[in-house]
Structure formats: structure tokens, C-alpha cells
Length: 372
Image (cartoon, rainbow, N blue to C red; front, side):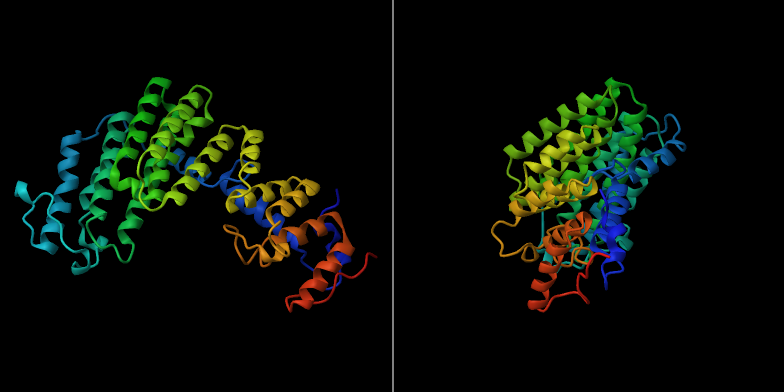
């Protein structure tokens, strides 16, 4: 099949066809970030890259006991809270005392309230004793989430710290998945998935799913793949059964992101594509499926998807993308349509498309021209 990049020179005024630009974004940028030859939402190939670097630095033993790690992590948090609120955190009856967040100063990482968390995490991330290290890492995430729920993180510095901590656990879990035997792997999966029962974490859907995303690495290996499926299924079922606050739609979409990536990481691309096709009513999944079809040159199927997704719109140009960048998709789903017409060389359809845009005051310079 002749691609848009090859036909681009035949269209006057279009030195860079939309099909060429889409293929560059989809195949050379988005799919490359996942490293799996298809769309992913949560999985990134940098997880493995960083985990291999981390693995070379690990040493046996040296993980501080959990109670010691807990004390080191929590004491600075308590002192910070006591300093900015005046509440004596050493008194048992004050442990649950809270104040109006609007009256508190904006939290800053420079306060070093999280210095203990950072120190204990650094210790855990140096050891090849996987289970004690993960026990401390999950404790740190729980305590950090609880702390951030009691301070005004207006500048997002605490959120950035938490994101870094979650990423470090993802990288460490990749090391575990690659090296641990199935028994240790199963215990590691259980330890991490148990963290999702933390109520404050459930109020942060992106962080909650990021925790579970650290289990995806185990789906890459034959001896732990079934463990990853079972662990994530149980965790997601438990989340569905609990109150996750006001972010019901968001948490369920993120859960579906995880289910899709689990299939993709496990190498079951056919099932992953089928999952996308079954969720065309959700913008990100429809966009991922359309991107996959375009990358594979399945243009007739893509045209069917465009018609399905845009059936309630006057034109695909009127259907905005939920996830894909506006600079690459300036006409929303109409960009998919334009790139498909270019890829198959349908000049008459392109002329009609550009005439419509010209009539709407949104045309591109020049016209579709004629085939030479």
C-alpha cells in the first residue's frame, strides 16, 4: 500500500502531508515510548531501562527494619505538622487533630518534612533483599499520601515528590520481576497490591493506578504472568467494590488503562486491540485503536471506526480528541480522516474535505491538486 509520505509530493501546497506527520507521531514517538510496538497508556519502556541501571547498584542485605524506617520517616512529618499548626503531636489525644488547610502555609519540599521518607527510600532502593525493601517502600508511600492529605500542597511539590516515589517503586518492581523466583514474585505483588486498600490513596486515582502499574512488569515473564493477571484482577475488583470518592469516571478509565496495558505487556496484542475496539465510546481507547489501525495500514477498518466514533457529529472535524495532542491533530478526528485519504491516495475525497474546510474558514493553504 502506498503511504501518504510517498504521495505527498503529488499534492501541490502540501510538502508535509498529514499522513506523514501522524505516522511520525504514532509510530516513532508514542509507540516507541511504550516499547511494545503498539499503544500503551501506563507502561513505559523507561521502566526497564532504569531498572537495569538500578539492578547493577543493588547489594544484598542492609535494609533497615520496618519499625526503624517508620520512625525515621514519620518523625519529620510530625514535627513539620506541629510547627505549622501548633498541635503537639507527641500527645496521644492529638494524633487525629486537624486544622483548616486554608489557614496553613503552602507546603514546600524545602521544609525537609519528607527528608526521612527520602532517606528510608534510598536505603530500600539499594538492596537486593526485595521483600523487606518493598515492605518499607509501600509503608513510605502510605505515610506520604496520608501526610499530603493534611497539608495544602498548592504548588504541587508534594505531589511531585509522591510521583517520584511511585516511579522508584515501579522501577524497583521491574528489577524484582526480572530476578525473583515466582514465590518471591507473588509475595511482592501481594505487598504492593495491598497498598491500594489505603483510603487516602483511593482518593488519588492517578497515584492508586500508578501503584498497580508497578505490577505490570510481572506480566512480561512466563513464570509470573498468571500471578500478575490474578493480582491485578483481585485488586481492581476490590477497588470497584469500594467508595473511591467523586472521581468515579476517572478511576474506572484508569482501571481500563491498566487492563489494556496488562494485555499489551503480556504480548497479547490481538486481545489488547480487541479491548480497544470494545471501548470505542471512551475517547482515549478510540484514539488508541484508530492510531493502531493507521500504523498497521488497515485504512478501510479505520474509516469504519471514524464513522462509528463520529456518528453523532456533523463531520469528523467537529469531534475533538481527548488524549492526542492538538498540534498533531489540529482537526480532531478529521485529522485521522485526512491522513487516511492521503495514505490511500483518495484525491477526490481530499478535495471535498479541503473545500469544506475552506468554506468553514479553516482550510489549509493551496488545494489537493491533481495526481501527476
